[in-house]
Image 1 (cartoon, rainbow, N blue to C red):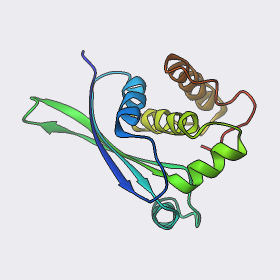
Image 2: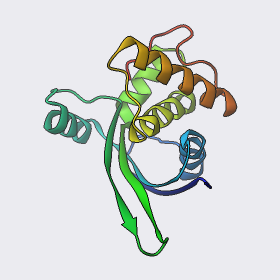
Image 3: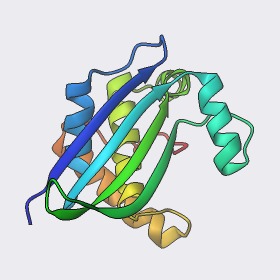
Length: 157
């Protein structure tokens, strides 16, 4: 089956964020199969904190939140496709990139790939799941020309 990604790109922050073309490239690289409609939204700290509190009951802004939705029929495409939202908190992304000695693009690419894998059913609740997901992240990021995000610093995603 051909892979196809429909991406909505939203910027709700004044912080600098990567352009849509980069985000699309990173998200496409992490699409393993099928067709997906994904919204990637960059937010400020207040919105990131509110979403994390509402959906994870944690009172702080986190780097990326993934919201997978049940697949739905798409009459225009003539198929059932998966949907999901990724919310990236730009100030957290920037702080983590600096503290981890990474470029903002490298860290953002990692978060987009990580979130895309969550949208496709991957998780890291157990050591085995974490190892499998991190191996896939490393492989996708290497194909995109980014270094291993886990080499020197354990990411907080």
